[in-house]
Structure formats: C-alpha cells, structure tokens
Image (cartoon, rainbow, N blue to C red):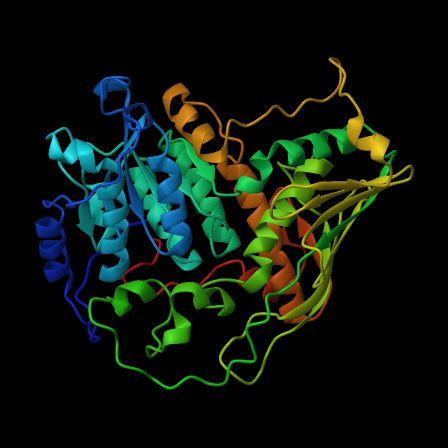
Length: 450
C-alpha cells in the first residue's frame, strides 16, 4: 500500500497547484459556444442509459495517448466523463474542451454540469461520485496513482507498461486484488480479433509444435539528441509534480511529454513502449499469460553521449522451460512471428493484419472442442463491461504485470551485459544480487512506498 504525503514544491513550477485548481473550477463552468452535435444515444445523457447505470469517469494524464483514451471513453454511451487531470494546464484545458465539445448540447440544456480540471490526481480520487479513472501519465507515475486509486475504491484503465519497475508492478497487482477493483492494462493490441485468432491458431497446433517466437521492435529514429540545456519551466506546467517519484533534474523540453520514454528515469524506451504490446501478443499466443521465462540475455546500444539513455539498438532473448525461445530485435516490420515445425503466422503491430506461411492457414476454423480465447468488444468497452459485471478484463493486472516484467528483465540484462536466470514464481533473479537490486525503482520523497 502506498502512503502519499503532499508537500510544497521547492522548485519553480510556474503556476501553483492552488491557482491551477482555481482556474480549473472557473473554466469548467463555461460551455463552448459551438458544441459538436452527437447522437444522444452515444452519450447516455438522454435517458437511453439511466443515470444509475452510467459509469462516471475521470482521466488522469491527458497528453497524446491520454486524450486518445479519453475520446474512446467519450464514445461509450454508458460512460460519463466529469473530470480531467494533468500537471500541464494547457493539456488539461484542451482535454476539457474535448469533453465539452462532445457533451455541448447537454450542457446547454442543463443536463451536464461540465468537466472539472485538476492538477493533482488526489483531488480526483477524493470525489465520491467518480467510479473509474483512466490513468495515462508517464510510466514512472503508473504505480503510485494506480495504488492510490485502488485504495480510493476506483476501477482503473491504466496505460501500459503496468509500472516502471518489476516490484512496483507486483504492488499494483496486489493492491487491485486487496481492494477488489476492476483493472484493464492498456495493451489494446490483445483485444484485436485478428490477434486473438492468430493466437488460437498457434495454441491449437495449426503451425505444428511451436519452436520460436520472433519479436520485431524497430525504434523510431529520434536521435542522436545532443545534451539539452536547462530551460525555463513553461507557465502552467507543474514540473516538480511531473517528476514526482523520479529523481530531481533540471527542466528541459526533451525530458517531458512525448520524449520521457527515452529516459530510464521515467520509462524503458521502445522495449517498454511498443515492446509491451508486441511481447504481450507473444505471450498470448504462447499461452504463458500467468508465468514468465526462466532465462533472459541480450545486448543493447545505450547512448553514452547526448540526452537519451535507453537502448536504441538491441537484441535480446527469452527462454522458457518448454524450449520455446523469444528472439527480440530492433528490426521491422513491427510485430510478432510464431514459428512452428509446420508453418508460421505473423501479427502486424499496429493494425493487426496477419501473414502466414500458407494462405490456407488463415482460413482455418477453430473447432468447438479446441482452445478459444474469446473476442473482445473493444478494449475500452471490455473495461466498462467488467466494471458492471465485476469480472476480469482481457488485459487483467496480472497479465499486464507479467508482460511489463519481461520488458524490464530485458533492459536489466542488457544493462548488466550478462545472461540472467529468473524464477517466475518468486519473481527474483537467481543468485544475482546486483540484478535483484534493479527490481526496485528508487522513489523520491514524498512518493515512496511505505
């Protein structure tokens, strides 16, 4: 359980949180002059979905992916968004405007009171009327917010990777279980129908005995990025709060927002970004959602000069007790290839298109007595359905944690430059104290888990 203590920021963070909240309250009261017109049935605000059956939500972290998730929930007729939260006031206001554009006609009729703007996620979690939250800040915030949300009794849709460290991921899983919450990891690729069908082909032996899984993870070329100078903190951006549990560092543009993923203090590079999607599909097809590999090794090119420090070129391998090997490389096309002794099938990420060793393979019918993985109504829809049913989502927290664990294992093996043996039950490296120390991610006061 995480005990969170609020403190004043010693660094200049532009607008204070009090000013931010005050501004948010004022701006949330005003409707836009020209709202978009949307079908009432898409909103659940016209009586189609009674108020007692609506899932009241807020979004925490509304940058690029956060706003994409926000739009997805706004398109669900039984979800009603009442708050957005971000330490960047401009991001928060833009997200609020998206909500108001969607609900504009209902605001004009007095059927919707408006979307509140917050800078501090704890203020969101204090609201008794909010049932669920979408958590989409940078990776280093996932565990702190998710554990606090579980304790506050909120159900969660949380972006992948589940956490920025292996030990923190287990804490999230334990908190969700302890407080009886519904949780969906944002590994939306596993909800694609084609991906689930391909996994069924593999698990029902259509490619013969599974021998190897090739994971293609090309890195978008953003570098090299030279060392960045310290810059003034933009107005309305609470930079110290953005750093949160991560070590303090001077503000520079390439440290935050989209670019955070290439700094090990906040993320794990491509390995934990889209790698979390692709490795997740590999595990689904392999049938190892609830366990992990026994060995990991790899080599990575970690930039030593410049600003980014995550691996930009890499090859790493996982081995399982059944003899299946995952070969993960910085190459395209992005996706996962399952190779058996009688054929292969490839899932493209993103999009979910399939290739196979034979066109006939993709026309196979899965029989009634074979393994069926079910079909998702959509990743966000699946979450809302299970909030009502109190069931397990397609990307339940244990699944998200096991996927993220493999991503972090790969980074640890590459950083230490040696093979590692892993105990998936104890979640410890075997006879390797140095590697086990990297299971924990140091957290800056006052955000430590205590």
